[in-house]
Amino acid sequence: MGNVIKYDRTLFEPEHELFRESFRGFLDKHVAPFHDEWEKNKIVDRNVWIEAGKQGFLGMAVPEEYGGGGNGDFRYNVVMGEETVAGRYSGLGFMLHNDVVLPYLLRLATEEQKQRWLPGFCTGEIITAIAMTEPGTGSDLQGIKTRAVRDGDHYILNGSKTFITNGILSDLVIVAAQTDPEKGAMGFSLFVVERGMEGFERGRHLDKMGLDAQDTAELSFTNVRVPAENLLGEENMGFLYLVQNLPQERISIAVIAAAAMEAVLEETLQYTKDRKAFGKPIGSFQNSRFLLAELATEATAVRVVIDEFLKLHLEEKLTVEQAAMAKWWSTENQVKLIDRCLQLHGGYGYMREYSVARAYLDARVQTIYGGTTEIMKEIIGRSLGV
Image (tube, helix red, strand yellow):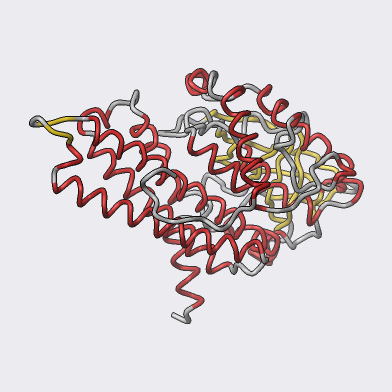
């Protein structure tokens, strides 16, 4: 963490640091040389998923009998997230795959489903996504309009989803759909829709302001006949399943925020030492020095808090409210810090060739996806009885 973060982390053991070195080596060899091209193409090469599978970076928590690593220690996921962010490799959808989708499969899938999907999940041959958000429904999951109607040994699925990460590459998509509209939020279920099912179409490859190499798409479902054996968990239990799994998704987003703050601040500190104005480094001016002191304090505070929340998560004690706190606070601070770092770069900070500009664009979605800042505050406020 260089000179910026004044904090000795106690979260990791030596084996996690060895894993960090291994994953960093993977990124250096299989991602760094290609990421600029992926950003131009707006999508990564599927081969990077296959290579990640070969090296054991997909499905670490999957039991060995299904081809996984058999190790559910979430700290390995944290290491992968931190190194991905430190390298600015925004195209990799590994965190969504490992941190967000996998818990649904491990907790809810039947034995037959696990045998069918988990081996490919671990090899990278099956890339996953989760589809909750709809064109008219963002953070309000109760407003889901996608409908699944039972028809013999199938469900007939109709509807559309948007802002779906891994939307173009995905082979397996967990789709939230209403199965009993009369029950509102308590009337939707989760279905696994697979590539090639008739009526399942990829819509626009969305043109985002950041995260250029990450494939984000609209998905549409027109009379898709989903086999009943692709129901994930029990019918009408979808909302409960989402509530159970969202804390891990939100702490993962907070991990990204903390790591991004450190990486951008480290780079900015070096820039202010090298860049001169009026005959001396811009970092030596009192205004710059005071601002850097503030940003270093904020980055350290976020790191300390998120590590403590991660310790709670490792003990399965992280609450929905605490995850919401971690998510909104870290991401709002991320956006603020990177904005100030861009200012310290002056005109160069506005140029995409400088990584601080790309970090600025990539950061903006952090306060939106996984539940907006406003929704996070609503969750916390309700828990306070107000």
